[in-house]
Image (cartoon, rainbow, N blue to C red; front, side, top):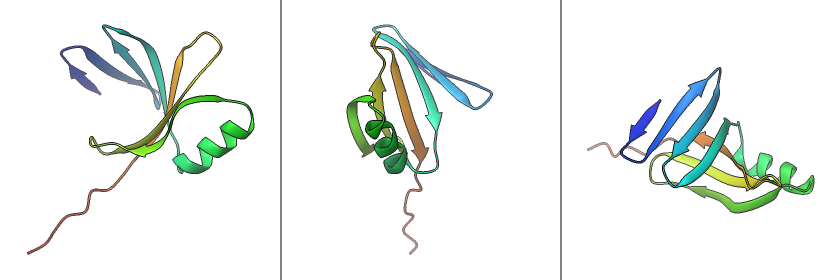
Length: 85
């Protein structure tokens, strides 16, 4: 799905796994609404380390961790506005 010098992402049946040289594995899940999923998970006690945010690489995401500090990312691709001349 994506590869950089120190990070790679693999998609397996709709769930993405991110591996980095200096990070723990990240499990990423696409959701319809990051803000709603964030609030639902937070209400259930999920420990978020980032709030929902639009990223420059074209996704809106938020990250939470489990008791073992494994990272889980909920995300959604966002449309970039295109200026027409």
